[in-house]
Length: 273
Image (cartoon, rainbow, N blue to C red):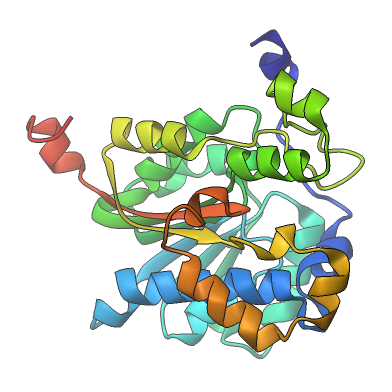
């Protein structure tokens, strides 16, 4: 616990180009799979069911890809990002792509509830939790942004995947230490990989009921490098989508995507835990 208290949140100033290169450039399957699963889940959970524009915030919105897509669906979108570098690139990416409907804020998650409590129909928080020193506390801050019966889309780095990767490469010291946290400085190794069951406990404690649950990149990250190179991207994407909601594959996916409904009124009246 003392090590956890010494950590600080990781903000990615100076990393915008590297993020794009590592995840999205040249139709990287990592980015294609990620966006395909997230977009499918959001459509099924909320977007295809709404008959009017939603008020949405993308917390830690990075390069703006999700915010731009949501704005393109006709929704009112706020993108909050603490990194000036990332925010500048997001604004550039949004230029000419419904950017007039996106509000850009240079703010951390912790800064947002003071000015935006109960404001949003949908809160998006993707690949943020694992870069926070205290991820548990982030769930409460996210819940405060939602109106009653609003939706949270939460994607986070899966501790079980980090363990599986260590087993595959034979790093048994790391496995036996049960410490999969990186320092967050030298490379893109999350400082707070999280256990999905633990996250569900945090969600429940904050009146958030999981309604949809998918794994993002169930097998792609475990493929041998030469197999990745020769694999047909359509085959990979089709099978990633097919397996994303099935156990045991969902449980070892690199990221977990949980869509939750906020039920504050019911909790306050004693109808839920």
